[in-house]
Length: 170
Length: 443
Image 1 (cartoon, each protein chain N blue to C red):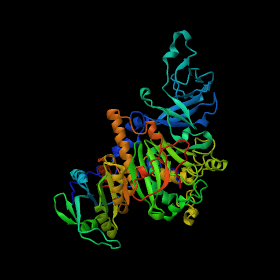
Image 2: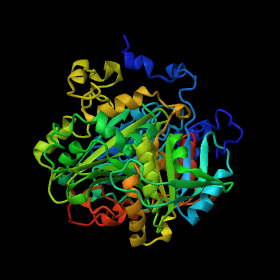
Image 3: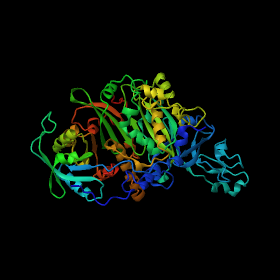
Image 4: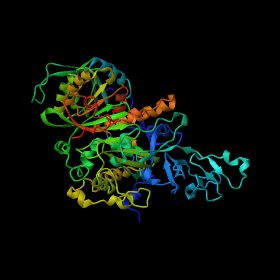
């Protein structure tokens, strides 16, 4: 008699896999941290997305204070130029993606990171255009992003971010 | 603001659309990914499978092509179409004699290039046999492996220069096992570093090929590593970062070189190991597993552990085509007691079979439209992205894919401690590159 595994791992059996949806759309907030990334994010926003939102810049009153859950006032700008409270957006996010260009300081990462930590929202950081920055310049970007990104990707080309968002069902 | 537009059709909403999944999983002749694989030298056989001149021929199925390998009277290796050009008989039944393989049906004989050199029923002076030639591919021994290149002859790249194949044979060990799943399912296991903290968590301090390394302390002390994925010339570098002393980070860095080479970061003075995943057809692959040490021969204890299926190797059933002892027909020797007691995380013993049991359970070719990837899957996402991009660039513009250039093969995995602001690709630059006579950077 065939074992359980031998019977159930055939292509024939694979056809019986239930086809009902197994997930709900995830809210993914994509935030540009610098001017070059802003252009990339704007272009991305022209595509068709399920539940992705795109923001072009972050402003805040003061840097985060160590030990505080949430210590500052901070705002995002959306593509229409409106100003929205960062905390409100993070509050409704499943994942926040920070987009930075290699060599930029990415200081706003600490503000976003603090908000995400307070709301227990996962963060991913994407560094684009790796080839245009020196090692030292990249180090500077990493220094600002690493403490606040639970996943970090350094990509050579801008087109990766679209693949990533599609793969995450954004 | 929500930039939601018109809802995409279900296929458009998939993590990987059906046609993309087919593109990356189908490797037969004429397919884009098949063409990509046919750009590289790939492992075909263990050298020990053709141990002497005029030994029995072997059936070899790679990239959905049925071939036959043999070693002639002078020690030349041949990899030719499995079937006799006359009536389609399998040449596996052939007689390996006097510099050729003779079909036992009517005596047609072929040399290692597939050229027919004798058709007994036809007069020699008729020249008939010169008009018969079976498809053949080069078969070359480098290290413990017989490699083949199945692409256009005019684009044949230089021979492979993977370090494990170039160290003295006393320093390396190679095994292979049959895996009943598409090659990409297996490869993605090698890229997906985040599963190690779960599926293989029971093995770190018990497996003789891992235990005792200082780095294990960091692994066990921080079970939630942070991952960084960085593109490299040949593919990717995947870094898993854990906290070390004095604010520094302990990094375990896994290189992936296109299309199917990965290397596991080393531990202490143990040999370092890695894999190739080679498609047999679209529903089966060879899991090749190597271990080597740059600066010393492997000890008999290490070799013996590898033969027994420790580390990343698997014990296989003698007399079979490298079918693992624990396989789907015996439910991988699932041990629920061990699972419950925590001796193994999944109930299956050994890293190789822990991986294959789960990857085979997905079905021969997993339907990736049903996946729900998360941000720690970025290594997998990036690998698919690069494979698709390279396959299209090759098919549309003839662009040579990454990994063909032998310089891309001069990679190492590494385990290192670095300052907190250092890009690991640069901080561990020397450690991630082959340096002749210098051992791996390993903690």
